[in-house]
Length: 328
Image (cartoon, rainbow, N blue to C red; front, top):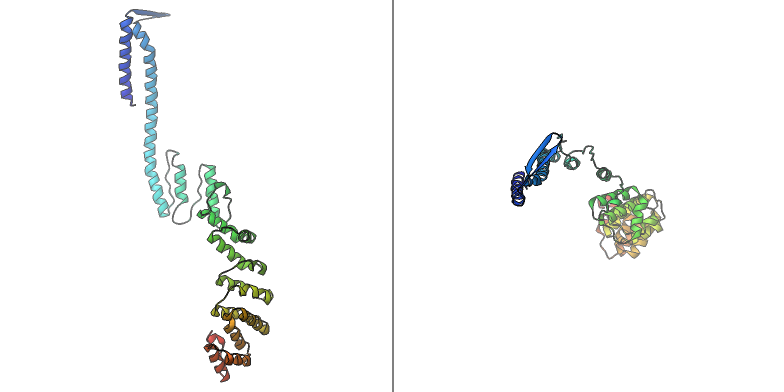
């Protein structure tokens, strides 16, 4: 209710109360206090305390109305300043506006923290809990691992996922544990964990999982340079990959540098018995390791064309010793 309406309603009420009391008690009452004497009608004495109370009420309303007016004016000023802060955040600038109220302290710090361009400055909130959250987010953003359990983030939350990716990259045992645990695992986390196993895991760890062809070749290159495992152990990894003909040739290129021609040829001969796509890679190794007689016999008896191998053999037999890289 507005002060003017309240004042008018109060005066009307006091007037009605004075008339109602005066109609029943029209006499006067005199009060003496020391040398001071007051002589009023009974109705006046009745409404006098109410009038004093009303005056205090009006003073109270006026005081807090003035305070509310000043606060509203400060808020309007801060609204304009905050709009400038948002503009600075969008443009990658550091805002320098000062606010008259504390309402915009957290939004102001948040706008600085969420700037879309450039490096974020050191942002400090007045709330310690907000500072903890901001520091945790910055750690995740910088590739570190933060404690996010207290915030109850969903498993699909981007901050949670990035924090898990950071943990997987920095802790091989954690990555391996996630994969061994089974159950549902976000595709990004699973892909990163498999990548960690492919680049850091032992053959025993690697054999527990299935990899895409790119990661598989990465594992083979790592274990075969130098050859740190038995070829029979490596065979189990390659066999279950069901490689295509061209992929088998790529695998042969990786393993041929081990300077163990008989063992490598035997490896692919065994592989072609379980995967017919490995036949060309086996014959390719015969050419690369100089076993031309065996290659010639194979090509003569084979029903397949193997045109690249036949061309290489023809050139070699005509004193044109070409590298296999010419066609492979």
